[in-house]
Image 1 (cartoon, rainbow, N blue to C red):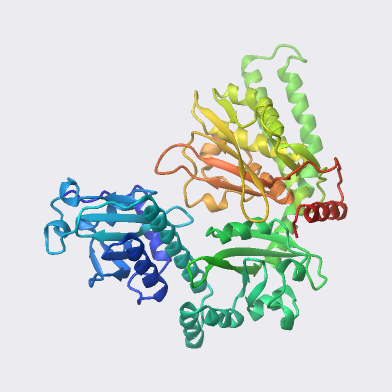
Image 2 (image 1 turned 180 degrees about the vertical axis):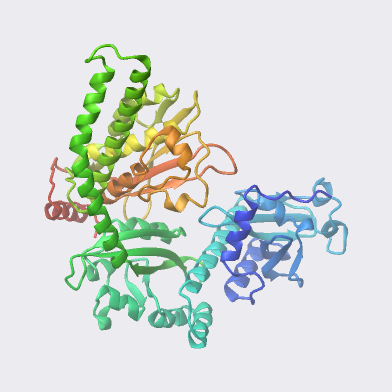
Length: 568
């Protein structure tokens, strides 16, 4: 009997499973109900929420089965975690992988198995929601869709459980509150109120359902009138771009980010790290989100002081360095006559390094301008298709020098325009960063593909631009730091291919100032090809051509446009 091979990311997958701290935990109604519902929909006598550990599969919930676990060596689920979709065995006696399996030939007599993988937001398959029968059969299309939907709800419950554990309950009374909270939404609301973290629950219309006292204190809100109030009316200082993250969380995606905002008590600014988790209701549907914030103002202010220091130094260096670069270029070009070969080589090396220093200084100054609100943004309504097409043309020579071709879909002139309101020069800067990075990490002879994807859903339309290379991607442990300043996954590789470690940080800052989102999707299942993407709000029709560098004027125009299109 062939046992299932381990996934290529097995060590990381097991660590991800450990982070949920759920193995050997007590039964919980939320998971039992999902297993029961799966059995009922699929007409199966057995249904399991199965988690695949190093040497066993352990059942968090089980319907129609008395045992708590079985060895991994005989596990059907160990095969299922190699798939993104449902793994179905219609007749195990005729499948060479299972025909001599003890669960098939023995007393249990399994004939049919279908398992939907439990895939975490960071793309690890922890186990399955599976159904089992003792007669050969197959699922209908409707049953498959239902089983996959229920598997996503299991993952949502795992994420909610993990979010609540991360609040680090300090004593027995708070631990008791956590257990009661998991039993019912009403208890959950009471827990949120007394949680030792800045946490809030909001329903699908952005109304506060419950808030912790620390959240009220951090946001300086009127304690008696928070519950039932609209988030954006109560917190007008909160960035509007958060709406996109909110809607993603409603669809089951955990969201994380940072926000810079005016402090409600009059201080110049406040910086927070935030996380948004879907909040499943008793019917299994996401009824809202759970928001956790952490005030990191002191840390960010220290970083700002460091940034200002670096900026001052950079300003002082740029003028003499520009002169040095120009002089070296002239010498290399022969203005002082023909140089000896050894001297020419040294001049060329010095010139290339001076150009790299100038690039680094310019990137540092861009970051400093964005963070201090000094970089001017001239917003106008443009056709994103035309903008991307032009970016491909402008960056093609750089890619061709590396032996790479740039290809785009959805940008031909006959396509209907996709209107967005952006600073065209800044979005071109983002496109140049993403395209040059993709070209550098695509092998000679390869292609970088650019896609424009229109997204419908929620209260607003969005459009996504994806830049997909043919490289290996970045290590999973580094992915969360990709958009940080000076972040480099492999410094030796980065130096070989060039770059300052600031391009993605600048791109993130520009997209966030445009009230969009930017992100990274790793290669799937060990294949080559990573994807960087950004999303913007799509306008239903072009607004009057207007440019402004004033935050107040920009805000007023944006509010007016949102009201005309049914926004807040």
